[in-house]
Amino acid sequence: MDGKNEICVQRYHAPCGDLLLGSFDGRLCLCNWVVEKHPGRVDRRLQGLLKAVYVEKPSGVVQEAAAQLDEYFRCGRTAFSVPLLLAGTGFQKSVWQQLADIPYGQTVSYGELARQLGRPAAVRAVANANGANALSIFLPCHRVVGSDRSLTGYGGGLAAKRFLLELEKQGRK
Image (cartoon, rainbow, N blue to C red):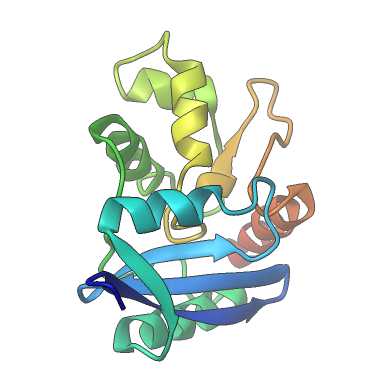
C-alpha cells in the first residue's frame, strides 16, 4: 500500500442519492455524494490532507453513521453524535463548525453565515468552504441558501437539497 493510511469507506443508499461514508482514525471524515457537482474534488482533497487512500471495508464509525442516517431519513433524528474529523484549513473548519449550529429544519444565507463568523465581507469564501464540506448532512450545508432564500448550488444537486429541506420540514411537525 506504499505507506499510506486507509480511509475505510462504504456506500450508503439514501432516498435522495447514494453517499460514500468514510472513517479515519476512529472518526467520520466523509459523507459525500457519489454523483456530485464537482466529481473527485472532495475525494482528492481529503485523501491528500490525510495522506490516505480509500479502502472499501467496514468500520464501526461508518456503521454507526449509517444507522444514524437511517434514523434521520425516518425523521427520528435531528442531530448526530458520530465523532467527526474535519480535514481542511482553519477558515474552512470555522465555517463547517458554524454549519453544525444551524438548527434542524432551518436555513441561513451565505451572508448570514459570514456575519455569524465575524467576516461579513467573506461571503464568497464562506460559499467556497461550504462547497468543500466533506461531511454532507452531518455538517448540514444543505441548510445554507441564497440571500433571497432560493436554493443555490449543492454538491448532491438541487433535487437532493430540496429533498433534505422538505424532510426536515416534515420532521419538525
